[in-house]
Amino acid sequence: MPHVFRAIFSVGTALHLTTRGMHRLGRCAAGEDPGDPCRAVVVDVTRNGRQRYCSVRCANRAAVRRHRARTGAPSGNGQKPQRPSVN
Image (tube, rainbow, N blue to C red; front, side):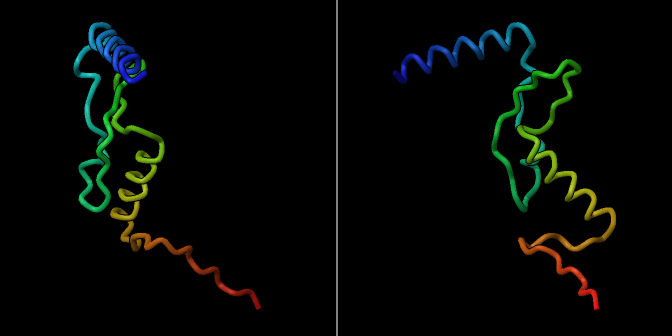
């Protein structure tokens, strides 16, 4: 079974490279972040050829980092923010 997977993967990669070009393959742009690097590969299948992230999750994380850097907001530490109590 692994040899079938390898064959399918190889044919798919070859078709992608011949139809769309080598410039459509690359590393996820979130991999440049030293705090939480992503090592995934991006296969750009968009019409305009501008896909930079491997997933919506990586794109959202990068957007949050940019927003926090711009506004000076503290970075998340995994805890939910406390809601002010209503008295």
